Amino acid sequence: MSEQKPQTDSFKDSIVNIALNQASKKKEEPDFSKYKYVLYARKSSEEEGAQERSIPNQIEDCKRFAKSLGLNVVKVITEQKIRKELWQ
Image 1 (cartoon, rainbow, N blue to C red):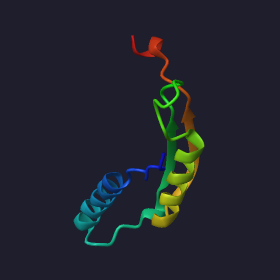
Image 2: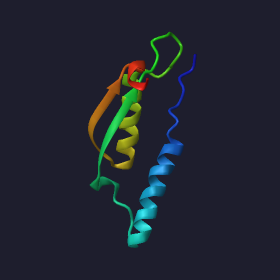
Image 3: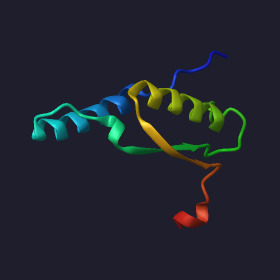
Image 4: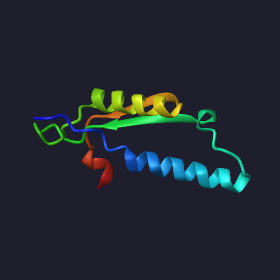
């Protein structure tokens, strides 16, 4: 089975568009480095094959992505599975 690439293009585009919109109001280039960022990785199912990306792989991909944009990641939050009782 081939490893899937993380789907970050739409996420990256969203972040860039938000920053550009804010910067255009101020007439300056966005400075992503001045913000603090939190990574959130989640595995919602324990069934084999239900989710291909492990939490460590998600974190690695997100950190690599954040570094490529010069983002300051200050915390990593993980969640193993959905706790149904919280949503009822």
